[in-house]
Image (cartoon, rainbow, N blue to C red; front, side, top):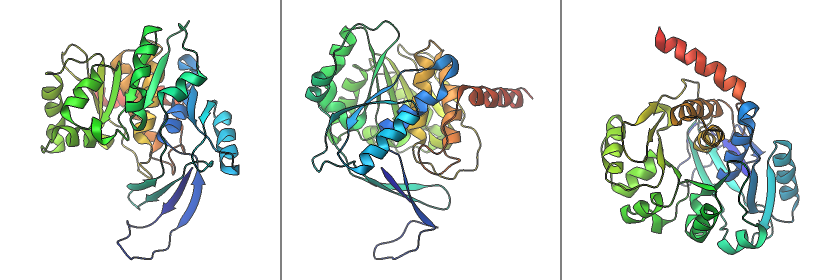
Length: 311
């Protein structure tokens, strides 16, 4: 559960400021991604099961109802220690930048094993792991892959032990599709080049790695780049120019939209172009799930972008 606080600028230590408002909203990286993935719909419809920790309080009941209304199935496989829904405070500035203070929880391999039989899927299926839970879920990766699943990972919240070059190399050797933002990549590989040369620096790094799958580098308002396994030229896609209200959850929305197309056999470029537009639209409303783009809207805006590029 996110508490959204909108203020002109981020307060300093010992400041006391009045928020324009403080609202409650559904949040969390995995839930944001799940809602974005389901929301695409039409030819890219998915069944999404969200394995998570849910308490026994009113907020947990509210969150379950909200997710169900959005088409997300919830697998409440663990109760938090305090038996209530984890919370976050999201401070949103006038320019749309946000600062997040959150409680966290960790799911383990035992949690997943005890609550889910891994069977050979009849349709394209994917186990998606948020960075927070990566290290504890390593045993699950091979188990799901052996059953015929694909595995994707979003590096949001990746533990400190996995934020080294050696650990990241090991990670991309296990995962079929990795989403990483520029800030995380900079931290892992100690990159100091300006954003303008970030894609070239990433290409240089990834060309030396033996990756199992493809890597998607998200660059916020500057779009994204996809680096194919086996090398070759990267795919670069622009973000949609929008009036940004709140950047919370844009990376989650990107991954959710991308996965919905990827699992239906779309090309990496097609998935990335749709995802970049979906992520941009998310920033036009307050809250990580304030705007969920469907397939029709994505295609409409993608066509408009293609027309402008042709002109």
